Length: 412
Ligand code: FAD
Ligand code: DHB
Image 1 (spheres, protein in one colour):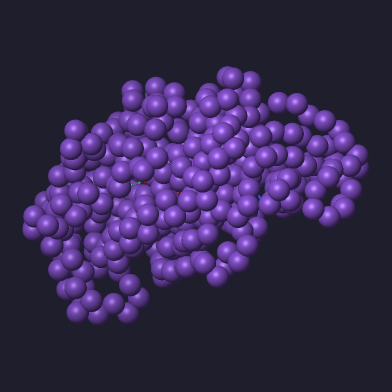
Image 2 (image 1 turned 120 degrees about the horizontal axis):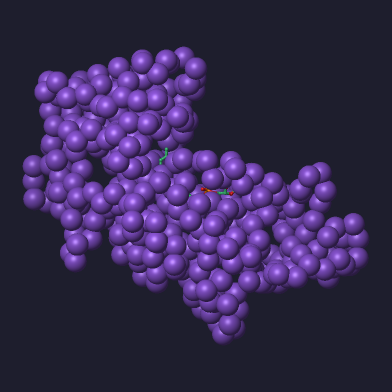
């Protein structure tokens, strides 16, 4: 990467950038989450330079917990681009999903054609793997660097940023907005709000990470009158569990013992099985929403991942969708910059949306069947039982659950 100090930058309008250091690259990437880091990796392996700008510190990004369940296509993509070595060693394959409701436990097998299955491997590890690979190649990730806005999106893109109180600019051929749901990129897509759709759920997930081995009898989802619970894992000695809570839930109001007791109550199936307890090493709360911005491209700016869409986490799909976007985006950029061919870029939103809407639909269906809603009636509960029952006890329901969990194939 080369850096130039310029005192003038030709772009739409006449703004002078005399005080700003100007960096130059082919693709300016906003955000060092899974989407931005994977995009940078694929571009690098295609001989395309990029700069990643990330507003959080390196430590913060490495410590962020979030996702854990990966589709086969996500695993294959990480392996294909050389980021799958630890994933293949440490990823926990899982070939069924447990669902509990009305105090009873059920299990749905989840194995697809050619051994397609789900893998549990923490998002934090994926992010770490990609960061270490990039750093080992001597390529930059600018942490603690907040993107404040763009210019020249239609012809000569530029990204403005702030770091340590100073401002700077990246001049590039293309901008990838991989800055998550609360990022700045989406607001630069023309008329984005006219093509955006949002659904907010009246609850949140309280997630914990614990130094406790997974329990062999308790995993997956519990629908209970006290709200949803989910038992997952990160390794043979670390578990990840969630409780449905109020949207404004305050972590400080529950002791660790109360958390374990509440998980046990929601998972109770009368068998006496209990989760393995251990020190809780991380706690966080995430609001549940569905959101899609259907216009994912404007000029030389594209959105990928949570910047363009959010799914409620019950389907375990957000990161998997981000990987799908990034595959299409990387190839669109490659054809544009290497072959001067913008035809794939013109179809970027259309291709991504073919995976996004069905996945949003599935994630919302899971949410609506498994959570306790405010003012839920006994009738509503029976309707949820009917949905859950169809998923476990009919061929069609099991096939639907399996295919939706395994995820849609990639077109690119
Ligand atoms: P992010 O991970 O949000 O990354 C965006 C980055 O951009 C961040 O690092 C942010 O700091 C940075 N940024 C924002 N604004 C700026 C700015 N102005 N300048 C510079 N940088 C900026 N998905 C699954 O597939 N499977 C799961 O099992 C799963 N479980 C989940 C469980 C929970 C509790 C939650 C909350 C999510 C889960 N997800 C899951 C979803 C998954 O975590 C997200 O979809 C994923 O993080 C999206 O990656 P991203 O790179 O698009 O966005
Ligand atoms: C996780 C597991 C899930 O099954 C899910 O739907 C969401 C998140 C996890 O392990 O973090």
